[in-house]
Length: 189
Image 1 (cartoon, one colour):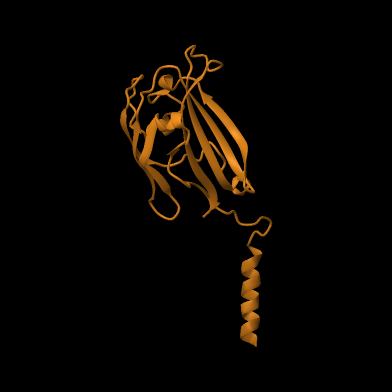
Image 2: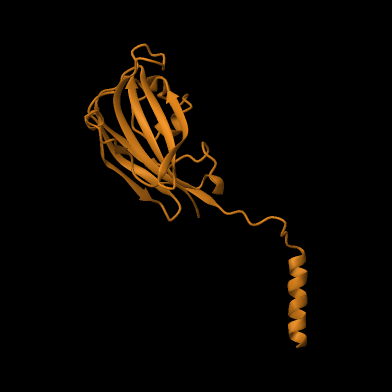
């Protein structure tokens, strides 16, 4: 009995140093839920083939995309890229963010704010560039653009629309070139 008494004392003394004012933080991770894939419309199907791209895993917590894109048409100056991020809300997609890159050609190279993404794709730094095969090498999703935590946990769908904008003003007069999609999840470790 005395032994149990001393164990209880040691437990209470040990707990007195613990901070119970806040629960332990749970770690969250952002991972690909699909490789990039081509939208089902006919125009997109004649723009690019992504069947050579796949998602692989370094370990249980880190997924990456690797493989080859085959562009059937090149990227021209004044190519607008429209990004639409949607979150799965009980089976319905809710738009969470949109963003336009007004001229993809102007964003090639290490001085671009988008280089952290583009560096994984074997696009030439000079633009325009021709149709052809381009590698994607161990592309890991960047989590610094979206807080990776319980509040943002869930499944997301990204649509990447490409347009040619002859006036290069990122506004009206866009001609649809093609569309890609990918899915990702924010989940607890």
